[in-house]
Amino acid sequence: MTIRATITDSEALREITPEQLTEYLQAHGWVFRSEGYASKGSKGWDSCAFWMPRAGRTDYHLRMRDALGALAQVEDRSELDIFCELVGKPTYEELEREVTALRQGRAPCDSRCPCD
Image 1 (tube, rainbow, N blue to C red):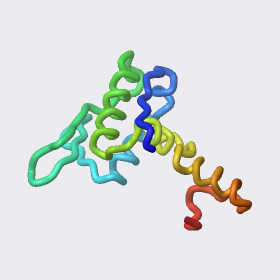
Image 2 (image 1 turned 90 degrees about the vertical axis):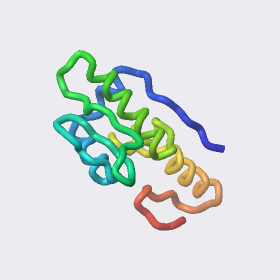
Image 3 (image 1 turned 120 degrees about the horizontal axis):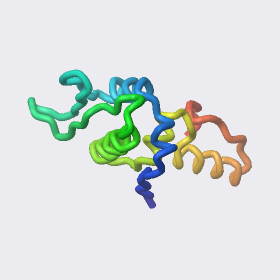
């Protein structure tokens, strides 16, 4: 079963820095079309795009919410998993692997371990 959680907590959304988002976007093939505009698509057109959140603005958490929503849509993932990856916390799948390992009597390992 796949859980598709959304992030609406403004304090949690403010926890994501612009640098974390930029690194994530670059690592996942997003393109910066102009200052503050990120998009992803194929064959010359954008299937999804959003304005980058700017730190210090009163609507920062709302723009970050838009960014997470766009990422979840394009990557077909939960916003919660993307959030966890952005801020360096374990995702649901990583926690599930560790719990399964414990139940099977194996030592859990971190998400970078190729044990599965």
